[in-house]
Amino acid sequence: MTLLVTGGAGFIGSNFVLDWFAQPGDAGAERIVNLDALTYAGNLRNLAALAGDARHVFVRGDIRDRALVDRLLAEHRPRAIVHFAAESHVDRSILGPAAFVQTNVEGTFTLLEAARVHLQSLALAERGAFRFLHVSTDEVYGSLAPGAPAFTEAHPFEPNSPYSASKAASDHLVRAWFHTYGLPVLTSNCSNNYGPYQFPEKLIPLMIVNALAGKPLPVYGDGLQVRDWLYVGDHCTALRAVLARGRPGETYNIGGWNEQPNIEIVRTLCALLDELRPGAAGSCVRLITHVKDRPGHDRRYAVDARKIERELGWRPAETFTTGIRKTVRWYLDHAAWVADVQSGAYRDWVAANYQSR
Ligand code: NAD
Ligand code: TYD
Image (cartoon, rainbow, N blue to C red; front, top):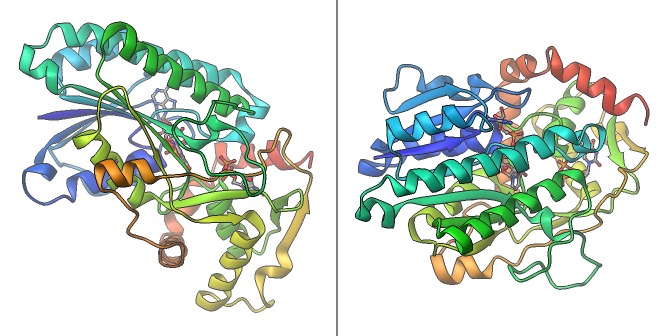
C-alpha cells in the first residue's frame, strides 16, 4: 500500500511523513511517495531521519506537472493522495500573489484531473477505497467579529487575502470534483499550526529566532488579532483520522480550542525563552516592537471542531502550554536547522517584507 503525499518536505507535510512512519505495526509500514518542488519552504533536512528508508520515495517535482503526476500515479498506484503542497504564507501572498494562484489553484486542479483519470484505471474494490485528502485552512472562512460563534463547516467562504482566496478556490474545485465526477475527496480546514520544522517566517518560529538573536519582535498593528493555535502533531493525528474514517465529500474543521491574541503568544514565548535561555540583556519582552499592520489583516479566527470530535473521535492531545514548551525546546535544540534555513532565500525574503514597515 502506498500514499502519494504532496508538499511533504514543508512544515506540516514533513511532520505528517515522520509521524506516519512512527506508527506501530502495519500502519507505519505503508510507503509514501513524497512529491515536493522544494521551493524556499521545502527542506529535505526535515526528512534526514528517513535517509536510506525504503518506505520513503522522494520525488522533486511540481504538482502542476501533469505528465509527472500521471507517471507517479501509474507507477505507484497509491490508495490515497494527501495534498499539502501550497504557497502558505499570507505576507508573501500580498507581495507576490501569482505563485499562490499557480500552485494553490492550478496545482490542485492538475492533481484533481490526474486523480480523476487514475480512478478510472483502478479495479472496483481499489476505486471504492481511494481517497483524495485536501489539506486546507480556516482562513477560507474570513474574519470573525469579537464574540461571534466559531467557524463551523457551514460558515460561508469570505477569504480576504490572496492566500486564503487561493485556498478557498482550491476547496471549491475539490468539492466540485466530488459532486461532478464522484472523486472520493475529503477536505480539512485547520487553524494555525505550530511546532518543529516551521519555517521562521511564520509568527511563532520568527519570534523565537529573532529573540535568540536579540532582534526586534515585529508585532503587526496592535497585536490584538486572534488566532486559534494547534500543535502540528495533533493536526497530523486529525488528518490520519480523516483519511481513515472521513466520509467522502465532507469537510472537517480541525482546531486546538485555543484562541489567543498575537501579543499574548509573543509574551508567552518571551517568558519561556527567559526561563530556558536567559539573556544577559534581560527579558526579551524589551524586543517587542509594534510595526505597520498587514493589509486586509483578519481580526479573528476561531474553529468549532465538534464535527471531527463527534464523527471521528479526534481531539488534540497537546494543550497550548505543553505544545509551546516543546516547540521552544525544539528550536533551542536545533540551532543548525535554523542556521540552514536562515541562509540565502530566507534572508532576501526578510529584507523584502520588513524594510518598508
Ligand atoms: P509550507 O509552506 O511549510 O510547505 C509547503 C510545501 O509545498 C513545501 O515543501 C514546498 O516546497 C511545497 N510546494 C510548494 N509549491 C509546490 C508545487 N508547485 N509543487 C510541489 N510542491 C510544492 O506549508 P505548511 O505550513 O506545511 O502547509 C501545508 C498545507 O497545510 C498547505 O496547503 C496550507 O495551506 C495548509 N495549512 C497550513 C496551516 C499552517 O498553520 N501552516 C494551517 C492550516 C492549513
Ligand atoms: P502567520 O504565522 O503569518 O499566520 P497567518 O497569517 O496565516 O494566521 O501570522 C499569525 C499572526 O501573527 C497573524 O495575525 C499575523 C501576525 N504576525 C505578526 O504580528 N508579526 C509577524 O512578524 C508575523 C509573521 C505575523
